[in-house]
Length: 194
Image 1 (tube, rainbow, N blue to C red):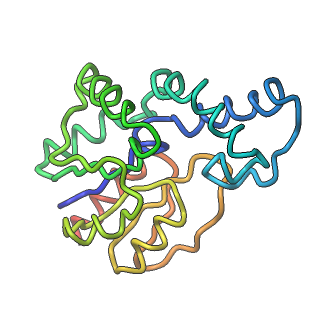
Image 2 (cartoon, rainbow, N blue to C red; image 1 turned 90 degrees about the vertical axis):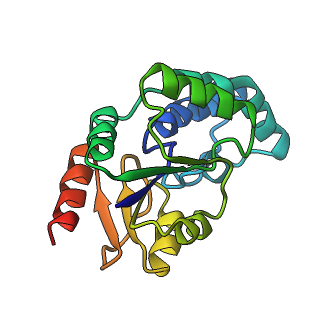
Image 3 (cartoon, helix red, strand yellow; image 1 turned 135 degrees about the horizontal axis):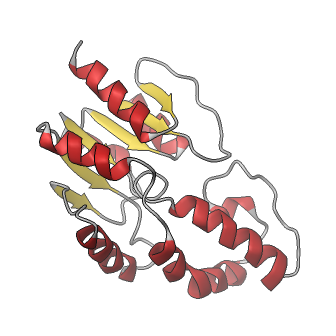
């Protein structure tokens, strides 16, 4: 099976780390309370920041967030199991789009943790649906509802990994909402056994 895997909020808990830093930046650095919608995945959509405030946030905290974020619970074990069972793992991430240096940092972290197990790497990808079609992905795992919807609309099975305040998605033939890597493993095994 070809499994597409997002990085932030799926392999790394960087989305949670980013939420913490953006809250502190808004309240402490900017001395304001400009949050508008906590369900938005992208911090740029959660706050009423100017372009300069957004740029300053990224300059000050982005690298630190990428270096500090932990692996999601269970992800190392499950991805290694899936790989050992003969599945093809394809990383499809937007990481590297804002700052290309994040790619090298991530590659180093993956290697140091024995997680350089992906068959292919797609960095700085905004349109994951195109990559999923090109690679003939059987199932994509992502934490951004808009990505999940567009991929599912192409009749590709999608797991919406929901781990933070975010918009709800209605499950259907192509979208499954799950909350941890144990559930993901179970769901993939059930798919294989059908």
